[in-house]
Image (cartoon, rainbow, N blue to C red; front, side, top):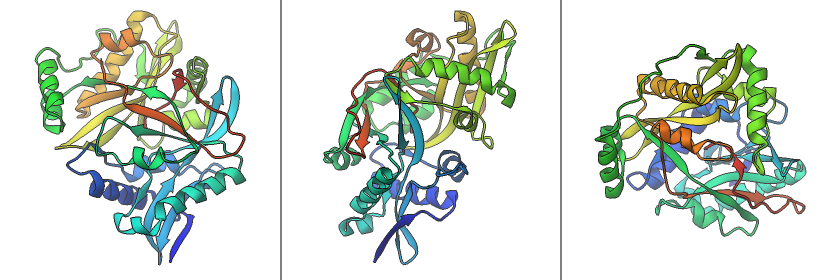
Length: 351
C-alpha cells in the first residue's frame, strides 16, 4: 500500500532518486538536471521552523517511490505579501504511475498548503522540449495559472562541449557559428573592489535585492535568513560583490550545476544579479569577473533567467545571447482566496 508522508531521508537520497527518475524518463531526449545532495540540502533542508513541512513523499513498504518536495517562500503580488512554496523536483518512479501516486502527492500538498494558508505552489514548465511531460500533467489541473513567459540568456564558454551536448541540429549549428567569433571569458582589466562575499556584506546585499524585487509585480521577497542562505551555504552558491566609493554597490550570485544531454556539461547558473548601484563600467567588470571564475572552475556555459529589472544591454555586452521565451512561470492556486496572477514583470530564480 502506498503511504504519503513527509520525506524522512537525507538530501543525497532525494537527489539520487529524483535524478534517476528524470534520467529514466528523459535520457537521450532532452537535457536533464543532475541534482546532488549538497544542492538539495541548500534548497530544501533548512532548519527554520516549518521549512520541511512541504517535503511530501510516497513510500511503498518503506521504499521511496515518489517525491513532491517544495520549500516555503515569501512572495509579493503588487506590493502585498503572499505565502507560498516553490519546487522543481516532482518525481515518481515510472513503475508506480498506474497507482495514482502523482495525484496523491499533489492532493497531499494541496491539503498541507490549505492547512498553513500557503496560497500558491510556484514552478516552471518547459514548453520548448517536446519530450517534457510536465506540461501535459500540470496544465490539466484547473488550479494551475500561467503567470507569464520567461526566457534564458546563455553565455557560451566551451563551444565544443556545448555542440556535443545539444540534441538539436539547429542548436549545434548556431553554437559553432557563435564559437567561431566569441572568446572564452576573461577577467576584467580592473578587478579592484571585486571580491568574494562575506557575512558582513549581507545588509548591503539585502538592500540591493529589495530594490530589484520591487521592480516586479510578482516575485520573491527576501529577508536576512533567506538571502544569507542564498548567498553563502557550504560552498554550494558562489557570490561576488563589487565595492564602489567604499561601499558594496552590486553583487552576482550563482551556483555550478551539471546537466546531461548528449554528453554531460557543467553550467554556471546565475540566480541574482544586482548591479543597479554600480556605474556602467563596474557592472561589466563584476559580471566579467563572475564569468571568468566560472570558466576557471570548468563550467561550459553560463545561464541566466531573464526577469524584471535586469539590464539586457549589460548581458549583451558580456556575450550573453537571449533564448526564445519557452519557460512558463506557473502558479498552482492552493487556497480558494488565492488571487489571479498575470504579469510579465516577475522576480524569480531558475529551478
